[in-house]
Length: 83
Length: 83
DNA sequence: AGACTTTATGGCAAATAAACTATAAATCTC
DNA sequence: GAGATTTATAGTTTATTTGCCATAAAGTCT
Image (cartoon, rainbow over all chains, first blue to last red; front, side):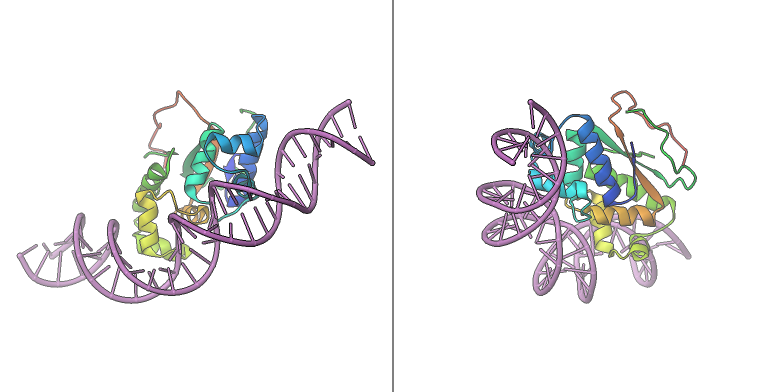
């Protein structure tokens, strides 16, 4: 479960993973927060042109939150099965 | 130091705080990653229309990283001074 | 293989982000 | 309070996102 998002692509992967773990498809996810399926698809594929608002909408739909922190050079791996 | 970003507005605040702590102004920050000053201003004010790519550029300029995690209902406060 | 579900891609219209430049407004400094 | 720096706002232009609708492509299941 990758959680660190260092680019639109990796963020897209994180969102896709989270969505699947919730057993949702793109259509259902989008419907929760008024985003159409093609847009969800593009975000998950890592479109850097995605608008910030769309990201926060998706985070809400997937019950996720964003944390901003200093770059951890060391901490490369994600200690993690905690979700 | 708020680090949890739950909306474009709070993300803007986090970025502004981080920028100031690095002793940078909007012009200098933007120059690091090819974003003009007015755009930095808008992001810090919380424009939801900001593009994701612009956010990652700014995170890079400020040496920050984004982490996505399950929403923590409890963890309201930010245990703090570690940055 | 065939039917069904899910995801990806395309065109169109409306809305808007960002660069650029300029300038107004706010903030700091002496 | 004047002067300098920093931030906010505005107009114009270009490029792009998104919703909408349709459809193609890929994946799943019996």
